[in-house]
Image 1 (cartoon, rainbow, N blue to C red):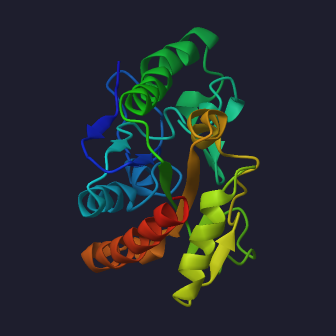
Image 2 (cartoon, rainbow, N blue to C red):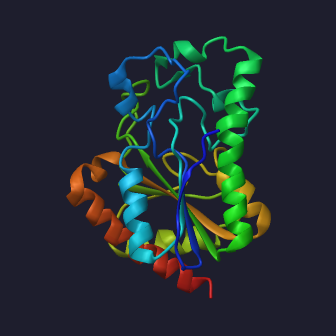
Amino acid sequence: MHRPEILPGTADILLVADHAAAHVPPGIDLGVPAALMGDHVAVDIGTDALTRRLARTLAAPAIIATVSRLVVDLNREPDDAGAVPASSDGHIIPGNWDLPAAERELRIAAIHRPYHECVAAQIASQRPALIIAVHSFTPKLATRPSEDRPWPVGILYNQDDRAASAAIVALATRGLHVGDNQPYSGRTLNYTLDHHAEAAGIAYVGIEVRNDGLAGKEGIARWTHILADCIVSVRRSLA
């Protein structure tokens, strides 16, 4: 069983990082080149360091995934075909191709279920006023080379836009070009927040930082400062 890393904190804000790791557990062979495990298809680049710094800055608890999204995508419904992806951005994942149903269920039971049980347990023991999901995205998809992705940061949400609206204003006030449900829509890909926040009436926001902005310590520090201020502003707006 593979559980996420849980960082303690006293703030009434919970950070979650579904795609922070590139780790592949022993016994699983994805059949991909080692270099691919550092690519955006395997991990949300920069989110591990960013989430840890945000947690320290905000004194907030955080739940950080410890397994690559190519093994199990924790931000998808467990019965969604994409939860164990056979391909991603043009890359075939041989170890997931025609994966036997029993093996798939083992991964869900060992990785997906414990992760979401940890999130649920954290909320039950220390109910937050605000949940923040931290993600990053690639400046350009290999399968859509002509598609422009100009946003340095995007805000994702489904139906409950209380926190998202405040976050968009807070970031735009800094002069940032903010993606409103871009580059992905929280109305179609939002499992963690739908399941743990929206369904429970907890305000939430998904934050997507373009990963070229998270290169190196300076980028992490810059976005920690920007997002910590934004999150504090959002929290105040909910009072």
